[in-house]
Amino acid sequence: MTKDNCCCSGGTTTILACSGGSNVGQITNEVAKRLDVAGVGKFFCLAGVGGQISGMLASVEGSDRVLVIDGCPVACAKKILAAADLDGYNYVVVTDLGIEKAHDFTLSEQDIERVMSACKASLANPPAKEVQQ
Figure 1: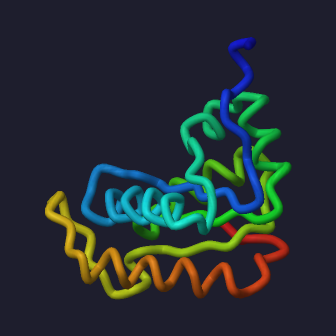
Figure 2 (figure 1 turned 60 degrees about the vertical axis):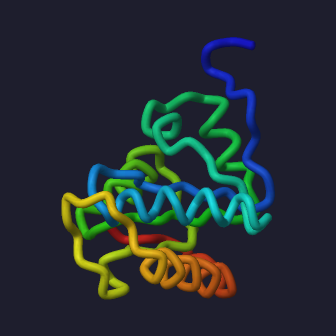
C-alpha cells in the first residue's frame, strides 16, 4: 500500500463529520459512528480528504452518496470538501437544529437522536447539485 492509498473504501453512502472540539463537533462524530453501525453509511476520514490523500479522495468521489455533517456555521467540513472540489452531497449542520455550541463534551442523548433523525431525513432527499460556501 502506498502512502496515498487508504485501506478503506467509500462505499454506497460515505459519511464525513467535522468531529470538532466542541459539543456539536463531537455530536457529529457520535452520529457518524452510529449511522455507520446502523448500516446507513460508512463513516470516513475527513482529515484524509483535507490532506488531499489521493486514495481517500477517489473513495469519496466514487461514493453513490455523501453525507457531510458540520457542527456549526464555521462549516469546516464543507470547506474541506470545497477545497477538494467535491460537491453534490447531503448536508446537515448541528447548530441549525437548535443545539447550542459549547466547549462541553457531555453529549445529550436527545441531541444525538435529533441529529440522527436530521441526517436520515437529509439522505431521503436528493443531494444538492452544488453546495454554496
